Length: 270
Image (cartoon, rainbow, N blue to C red; front, side, top):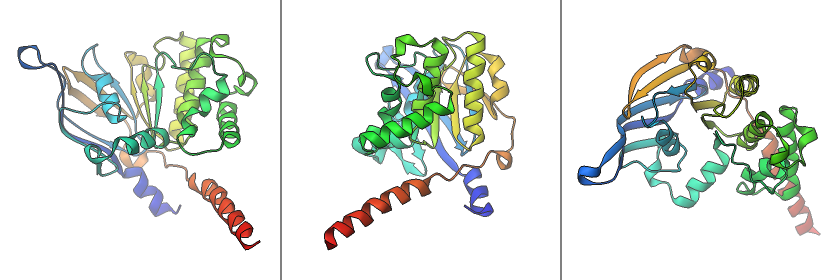
């Protein structure tokens, strides 16, 4: 990737919401989680979303993550209308392009940590051996290699959250959505998790994180405060031109695929 491409990627808008609304209920019982919501997210931003409970933060993450649909308005993901993406392709996008980190970890209790981390790769078409290798590499980043075959209940809360982050990044997604990832952790574990997210962001990943903790906003390049389903304040602390540049990760996978194709050709010649 040359310098010009890197600069263009850094400033590229990858998420655009226009007049987005989400209504629950009908008639007199109707209530809005989001109302005429507008937002543009640049590649490489680390956005913290704050606001009181019930202001629409989690609903917003669910729509961006293709887990929910708006009642009205437009959602463009990489310039493509989300409403025109089929359900099967949305599932593939969630597996490959979007990583999720939840407050409650959402690890499958009867699966070893390495298999929990490897789960997103099932939907990416990786062979089991390759999945486990990549999951092991992701866990090694978080100094969790010695815990690969532990079950979730055998880990501390901080270790479970680090495993959940490893699962979120194992497929090298473009976007990471984090819903209160430090909400159930003590201050020491919270700092560890946030430093890991800082490191992931420094590699050019786009992170959108919901939090109630104002002390964590020092990690963000942009802080949005929501109120009653709309944006109350939106403050950028880092210029778009200074956002981290994404790391090119496609080459190894292309090489891996090309080797498989060349092997098939050799077999065909025989």
